[in-house]
Length: 350
Image 1 (cartoon, helix red, strand yellow):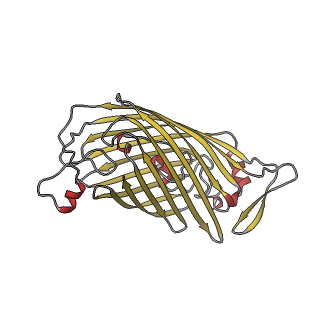
Image 2 (image 1 turned 30 degrees about the vertical axis):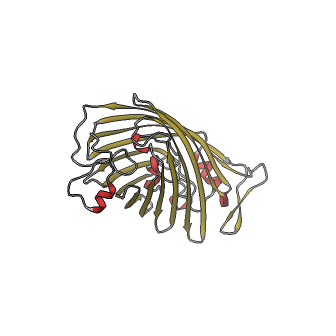
Image 3 (image 1 turned 45 degrees about the horizontal axis):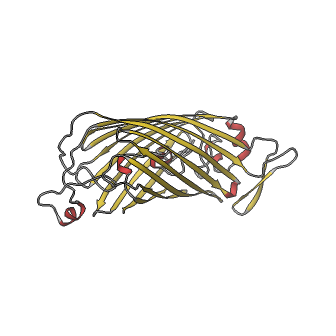
């Protein structure tokens, strides 16, 4: 099954099979972000807005997010374009509890395919010790606070705010995620008829008397440990179940891009049918305004039991008080395909 790592890491990802809303204290500030992923046969662009009525230094209160994503993928003369829309709200208490929920809708017009469903999240953050002085200015853009250094360069001076030093506090967070996503092929086939789809300007007839819908439900846990002011660790696991036989549904969809993976899942423009996903990662903050994200993911397909592995490295730099620039590379491999993906991220904090 072909899966991009950005899909495996949907906490802030593009066109996930089940988009999940994740709200952390660092998200409690109005921000606009553009994420782009490019490979030899696909182009993904996502725009996300996250906001909160509370001050950015607050570690509690309500927050919300909106996202639009567009994916274009090509295989030979066949091209598909998909659109994804998601939004959600969450609330974090002063005691460290958070609860949130959201909705996702996806469309692939040339396949007459839509997807829609809710997702929910509940979690708890635990303090693991007293405040620890920072070795450097841990907070950066999209995070609370900042630290001004002696002998700082003009760029570093512009990056730093006047809030003063904010001590680091070790913490551990555990959360549970639930979701449901219903896929529907429009113009449902009935006895003796077939469903038309348009691919690359040409109409194609899909088989009649086969399932034209399926529902994916999921449950997962994720954990994050902020152990040092310059180091944090995270891991997540998701398990998926389906309402119908996946192979039959995939055969009905007859997506040409799905054929690339031997019918083991949707194309990257349509989605995918995993049985489970495991992701581990770490964030390093070597300097005041740099951080580096390292992550690895493993996915097992529900159809055919194929396995996909992905590794990703992404570096981010704060530019002044408002801008953030990131870039990196990802490598995804399976039994049938290997793919290199480039990533670019641009963010603005209001």
